[in-house]
Image (cartoon, rainbow, N blue to C red):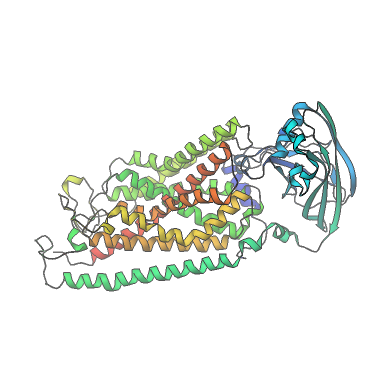
Length: 622
């Protein structure tokens, strides 16, 4: 199952709260142990359309009532606030091990507007979520006559013609809770609905009485295993999932074999051909010679848009480390069992790893003679947060317009800005300083061309002052073709896993197979490295020295295939509708794709850089 059972580290989570500017509160967080007749709080979370899972609203935005036992709730983590988890006490007075049978907890008089609101919600299949002892529980608001198989038998065409709102709609007024417990701990909660009351169109008022029942059943299931009932093993551990892992592994074997052939046979053959004439002068006319050796004077030339490439490299390195740490931390700590804990940990670890982004970008920028390192550091610090701010800001504006629970409050926005200003930016600058001054290159390998203003670096070959013309080549050796084709293999290695991730996120299945994710992510990085090496060799062998951006974009183009797949998934696999849900889906999918763009581009370019240095430093240079 690729997971370890057990709760996450509470001490680590507490540290995350303080380091990510959480609201200071005096929480009554319990230890999941109850005494007999101790209150069990039912927290109501959100309500929204069944097929638009991200379009959520506060539960009590619908005309429901609260019971007598009301407790105030605050956002316990920044992750909860960002995910729109606005928990409010239902007031249902449930006591541990105390059975109830159709007890009343509140009454509500609906006016005509309230009835219309409820009719609209039920007709659009609104469902709600609640949390009891940190266990998620879902329920449906009501039912329409269309939900019954033989509902249309009692509705005549004449009645429908007289009143387009004739369709009978019912709201459930009874909640039946069934608890399973082991000694003094709650293991599972199930919810059923009953006592539907019809909501008649144009009815002026309606009195509703909300009731509940509670049953308690003992079980031998251990507390550490209680989330297993919520995990859909039949879906995530399907044989197709295992088959995808195996096929991706075989792809890695094929690609590593191909790279080995290039390194051990093709490049070795090139070395033999180049060294055939002993004492060959690299700077004279080579006549009929051809291949990657011809561009030795341009291969280490400063790439265009150096600052942007440096910022992308820094951001990519940070996101790669972030992804690895989060996946491993989730495997070890089962973070998916805690509300919004993965998002909380991601924010914290991203802030801490900002030093990696600054170091990587500055090292790369300095290596190619960049001078404006302050702008590079600022661009590196703002590249990913800027993308999040643009996309998230647009979606947040829509959420405010729709009064959705997804709307981020001004205070939480200030917390995020403060986190970036006082942690991310300083750490990025610190990494930049370390990268510029730590183990500075000595320039033993050669000198740069005068027109490039590059600092002395340890390149194996010196850079010619004038770029060498790029000869004509076959269409499949053009950079754009290499980039377009290069992303197919990495996408193919993660295609099935992307499906499982999309299905989990957009249908609220709990994704727990992070062992699978770690394997697929590792395979993806290896595939990207191999693809970048092969594409770089083909490009250089056609005497085209523009390998820097090509090696980056070859792997980064995988993100474009992921986004294209998201369009297919939206059309073929979902029933999402509406401006808000569509914007949410394509906005955050674009953010995911941009993150993959930076990560895979960094991996590809790093592998290509090591490959290029290796082959040119092994060639005799006079």
